[in-house]
Amino acid sequence: MFDLKGYLPMILDGMVITIEVALLSLTIAVILGIAGASAKLSGSRIAYSISTLYTTLIRGIPDLVLMTLIFFGGQILINNLGDQFGWDYIDISPFIAGTATIGFIFGAYMTETFRGAILAIDRGQIEAAQAFGMSRLLLFVRITLPQMVRHALPGFGNNWMVLAKTTALVSVIGLHDMVYNANLAGGSTRQPFTFYLVVALLYLAITGISDLLLHWANRRFSIGIRQV
Amino acid sequence: MDFEVIINNLPLYLEGLWITLQLVVVSLVCGLFIAIPLGMLSAHRNYWIQFLPRLFIYCFRGTPLLVQMFLIYHGLGQFEAVRESLAWIILKEAYWCALIAFSLNTAAYTAEIIRGTIRQTPAGEIEVARSMGMSPLTQQRRIVLPSTFRRALPAYGNEVIFMLHGSALAGIITIVDLFGAAKIVNSRYFVPFESFITAGFFYLCVTFLIVGLFRLAENRWHAHLRPRQS
Image (cartoon, rainbow over all chains, first blue to last red; front, side, top):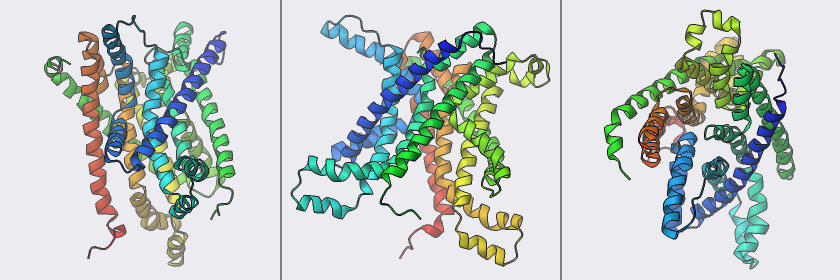
């Protein structure tokens, strides 16, 4: 049953794409998450409302719907804009649409995670830093960020696991990731089960390795915290 | 934006909504029935008893729902034994395949929620039950499970919303659910914004409904945790 008929390299090529999409969208998500969390905690009502609208909308709409909306709709939107500014025809590739959408979606989840993590920091430490005359940036780098990482790590890990699995959806908009290639290979060899099983095992490998790394990071960043 | 197309196709969306709700409710109910024994077994202290349930949970939580659905819908036809068996009547239908995949998937996630919550039962409660002479099964039935269901409520609410969002995948394998309806409207009239935003709006409404229902349930079942009203 595990005769892959020479299609293994193709699946592994797909896996590289999958990992690229995952890491790139994670980066976007973290940036959006920090921006969103800062907006929610900034005290400005407008920033708070925008950020809340963002997280509510994203958490209420399925990722697949958002992805197809951005892929098909973004194409029209960009080219309508392009007509006005006299740009050439711009093609939104599935890679860009997929990465942007996944990053955008998980930015909302990261916003909530980071907000909780910042709120978990002892208020007195921030006051102490202010009393020392630290600027806002220095306070963020020295006090908030290191402790935020510790508090955010479990939630961040969960988000990453869900994100890694969500990358499978990019096959729907035509990106040649693992799932897409497994579909092709399964179709031409008439062994779809075999190839989807291989893909499932590769996903298990990705999540399994991430689990180990996160466990290690969690231990490292929790040094100095008493575990009960 | 031209929403006239959408208004003309509203019946299609409503049929899609009905299919989506069917898929979500049926798979949640089936999933819960599988998840309760699975969660209890995986919370058991004995390594050999928890091994298989935890393997099931690990495999289904570690792989994308899309791949699980494809494995069942596209994959099982690979085996002649399956194609010639009676089960093929069910397994060749996209609708049933989606339902099976969703049920197993939500069963794994729910079982993990139950496992975690059972493990967090205060040790004192179980000690008291034991000192009252309750048998292990009576302990589970009277003490552990009722408090587990209460405490698992918020996490289960999230799982229900995830299931709603995951059900959109059914639209990929030819089922005309909400997402499937949006896909049809988009391909017929090429109105990507209007078609998918409408579907998104319906999903948003259902999500709010679920959030509201769970808030009501939490008010009811977590009444003892609320601060006292003066």
